[in-house]
Image 1 (tube, rainbow, N blue to C red):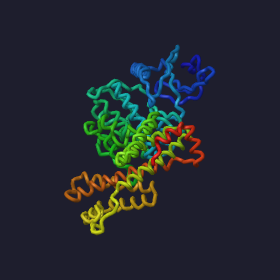
Image 2 (image 1 turned 90 degrees about the horizontal axis):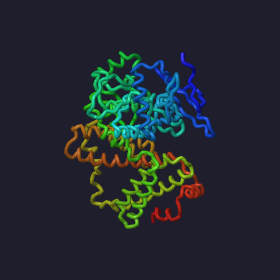
Image 3 (image 1 turned 30 degrees about the horizontal axis):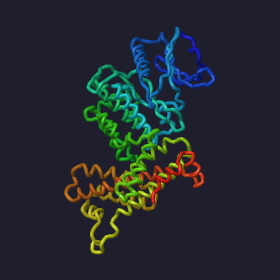
Image 4 (image 1 turned 30 degrees about the vertical axis):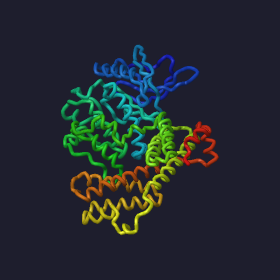
Length: 474
């Protein structure tokens, strides 16, 4: 039996976890700065040929990979009994533990984690690398407070181009794509199925094919029944769409990587990052210029684009004072955009036309006894009422519920002619309203200090008088 692992230059602390051929310990690097690390200790005598191959593969990949959302390997060493892989320490544990502790995660948190996972996969795709074992246990969190997701455990990963196929059984059954279990041939698209299972588990607290035995799991997969969203759980239309497209049994019907990276729910363009604030300020300066030149339609569009970058910038900023200052400015831009929208609306409706049906009233009238359509329209009506009462969170839920019902009706082919035209027009308007309400919800979820604190925060944030002058609106 091998002795307890020891490595020169490090002090071992508690055990973090263990697998079939390795144990991971928390350790501290000796020296003036006690850096915490995670050390994966692999007992040489326990290694089979396949385990050696996996280990060599993992070390080779980790040496090459360098990304914010992938666990960083700092070094590797060996002695008579062990091989040591020294990695960054992630104090938040793994995603599986995090989900279990919360039972399930709010959609906004799932989206943030999915964006980070998406960026990691985008990076791996550029290297022609497929992970092959994506699951919550292999995804670590930097901390419990403001956690950042880190993809780890590359023992099964391999270089695999989209057209390449493979035949060996890889990954964990609960997160494994059906084509691996049924046909034993697969390609890089298996990672997309695993992402779908992970998203499902984050949203609903369990994997879609949760089973007590492998036999039970295999039977569920063989049935090829479409995966159902749990009844009574409200998720946005974009989230539902992405989930259903990821969890397609047939890989040829599954969403492609290019579509996944550009999907509106993933929204990689607006992932919180160090660049978010710079992009937002550049767009605001452009908006102010258009505003000053009375090009109000362009100004509204640019203010809106800027706000969509300010929101992730607010999430990324860790300094409370700077965040308060930024939020104060964002509220000003939102108010100005709303002022300009009001100015762009027709001043009044001629009295002769006041008796004409609105598009919504006409749509209701044309829907006759279509109970599904009428029920969804009633929900929209309720959403608009809640929005007018400034009950934004409730309004957003109603908008998303109604859109989730109406979009399939529009796309299903049962609505034609004038009713199709009206529904399409109204859906565009309601989706726009839903996005605006979502913005208000995000802004209102961030605390705002009083004006004196804001002024002090602006100075700390580097918002100078000259910049304030450039960004103010008249």
